[in-house]
Image (cartoon, rainbow, N blue to C red):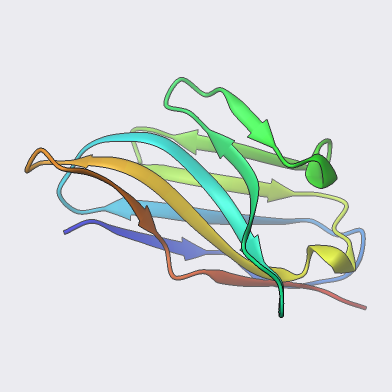
Length: 120
């Protein structure tokens, strides 16, 4: 069974920084694309950033230059470093990973989400 577990969320003041992590575990053969999404109260879940297995990245326009996605393939972990945080970045952040498991199946997995609140 494959699991994604996020950590590192919390409360931060506007202009502050935070790094959140997502670790994959279980019967994993290969992790393909990984990404971060966020959902603010009353809104749909939106893409924040993605990273391929060869470390190509993609960002939503509002976070470009402020957020950095990275991954450690050996540790099966994806990170999101968030600088210059704004109140509008407040949301539940969830990681997603496209994974081939040891049984030959390939599917998309989601973590449970971690709350990021930007407020003074």
